[in-house]
Image 1 (cartoon, rainbow, N blue to C red):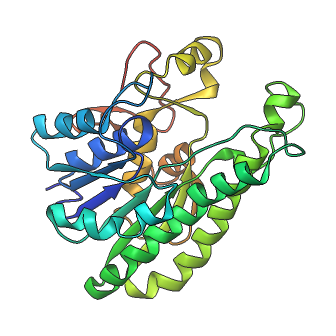
Image 2 (tube, helix red, strand yellow):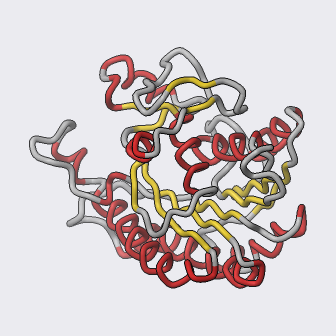
Length: 283
């Protein structure tokens, strides 16, 4: 029996990277997964597409469907949860993974750039949560996970990277800090209905499929990179457990609950919270 048997999960930003890994891990635990991205096909030079992510899960014997919507467009996202529910039934688990960044010094970030980040990184996940909560309340259960970022806090001095590198992430980090705060408030409001809302960020840069620049970083500084399986396992913990209003980092949570980290297909235990990223493997 998988820990998500009979559940339907909607994961945004799932054509590649962290979202795709979470979708695979959830499918391995029995969930029917609905994957969202802004388009079906490939986006420029980025590796992976929504079509490929869905077909990969189906080929492994899982239930998967795609729902296309550009979450930066309020009109396009206004009925996303309802549309996602048409595939396998009402949404039990919502993972708000999609995000966008405009890297600019805090003194230079434009109104347009700030508006884009706050709309996609804060308003979109809140909108989707508000769409999902009525159905979750009616069924007396639900899980909402917002993917945050360590950039929500200012890097410590001396900076590991250059000073500009530590500062240009500030406007993006501010949007994630806002999401964290909203997550905690929402969690305490809806827990009485059996709905568990949390936020999670990776401890380090996540090594995902096609992320060659991350692989290069890992070869120089292994502690700056974490395996994508760590994120997927921590997400599974938060979307099956009874955690309330946590704003936590993936590796810390896995260590806290002594959870083994499994491969994305769930078949192999790879290690524990001390698992290092495999520089030569892909997700």
